[in-house]
Image (cartoon, rainbow, N blue to C red; front, side):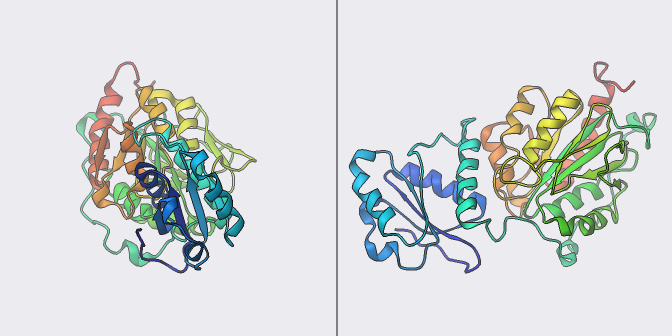
Length: 350
């Protein structure tokens, strides 16, 4: 039996599965979502004392051989004084395209029963940005000098997705970009709504990009950034115009990075791309393969430079990430990549 260190403020889960592989996959999904594991063990090692010893907020059971363990499962449900979540006893391989959806379902069910993990959303602490790399921005390549069109409706709009650890990474990325980049960004950052304005001010303090409000009818222009609101769905249509939908984001994450990525792919096609920064969970790993299949770039922050690498790692594991780097390396790669898509006759600005 494995016992992890605990945090009183974070839900503690007990994982029971009748195969080593299944226990591994379930624990991986639970940890990636930001929850703590109090116990992970096979059914035969569970006793009544452990079931109600007060260390667990929820028992998660995944059983392959249901006939063998039906009495155990029934007894656990009848005996436990905390919620018991029954899985279907099956889990796809980590690199299977079905894995992110399976992982997402587990997170959604856990969240419904015990709430969000204590670290699920990023917060804004000015001190966290004191160590941000203040190296000068990259230079705008000569090939892009005559294509500067700041203020013109953006024909290229990329998605920046981030969660825990993401605010600092996104700032490092934006600070490293030169003035005159012929594109715009939509940022989907998991954060409480009350922090968004403060975060925009921090992100924009040394960046050459201008932040605009997500108001219906606003047209996002080259050199601008819009942050997706937490409370309602935002889209950018093919005319670079902001649209707000009076509905909540799909799934357990707000805003949903997957939903933003899918919307941008639908309206911009090859004129979009996505960069996944630090974060828990796997937001972006469902839309990522769709983008990759369509020939759209999906990049991710390297695990070593992340505060939490679960989110970019999930996209890498599914095979949709074509480039990984530190925030500054990602910025430099985009500067060079901009020359490619700007000079491609099939995708040139008109």
